[in-house]
Length: 198
Ligand code: SF4
Image (spheres, rainbow, N blue to C red):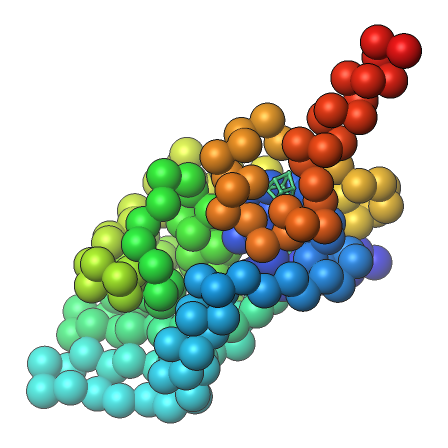
């Protein structure tokens, strides 16, 4: 039987498969300053609880979600239920919105779990970016669902093959990656060029 993939590691996979390999398969815990800041600010989302406001909106904090068909599991920071009975997963991020879709994929994986657990469709979620104090609505459209399914399949494939993925070409991502001092993508690139010209 396939091992379960933790949902938060799907975020790393969507960012870079090699990063997923180092962090999940090898258990590397390289922490950079933004990651440390983020985990300190994440305290409230990490405290289980439930609150209902005057508008009938219920907020559940730190909910364990899973999908046995997809072999994924993990925590949702917040799961809200509004007065209309809509279920809305909300992910808390300490930074600002990046140009990549890894946060959306993490959120959509939570929705795929909630749909399976509750037997009802989840149409939108939200991501709260603390730095900009913006709450972004994310529709779970077919494009995002397909990208999320692909990320889940890729995670299971990497785990089954037990082979480190190649460094990605988008060096812009590497600049912000805490794994860079271990991964050494530029040094590896130069080495490979040297070998090719030898
Ligand atoms: S440094 Fe770049 S290639 Fe290496 S794990 Fe990070 S994002 Fe991926």
